[in-house]
Length: 272
Image (cartoon, rainbow, N blue to C red):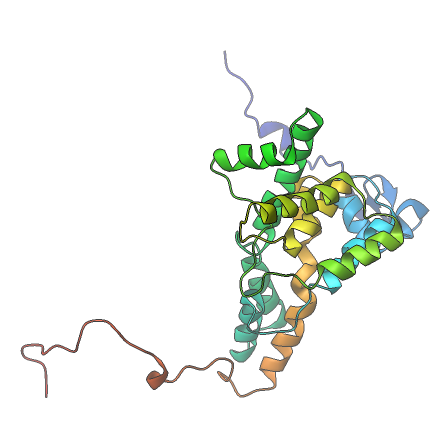
């Protein structure tokens, strides 16, 4: 017995729950008129992104915490790995969109970027459920590590402390958002690691992921939500590179390369 091809039902029509544009008439965003319905027309950009990603509203205070974390993560330093891509694109006279898109692409790095936070948020959600079932923080950490997994969000190159944590927690306390279960858990994990003598201090990826979990985001949703976090620092790096001569960002002269490979060899028949 033959069955219709799974794509057949989608031929010639777009079925969607997220919205649609009707040029000259209206635009619909998750069932709401984007320009007329106060449910969406009065949202901030951060609130609209959250609604688009999850289909539900976050509070204005939650949106403020998220946006502030973006602000406090926007370091205009071209030595930072993803900012370097934006600056190098600028030094080659690439277009702004290509430069920032390339820098954003490498921001999904496992160690520093979005994949790290994806794993951290996944761990906090899992560990919280384990603790609700009766496990201690120590037991949850041990079980996680015995499964061959890493503690994403703990450990930081170059510095053990993270300067963004204190001001973020001060803002969260001001807004009454500092005591969520996942935020408390991320500090408990940090305490356990210190007590065990492990050289892994909590970094900002852990804290922002914990807030994401407290605000109800899944790992994939929060990875999308946190997409603009580095953009504010990338753009100045790109523009500054444009103001310099082409190739002037991190040029490396030949005598600046330390070569430790094979010594020069004579090639039979080579011109002298």
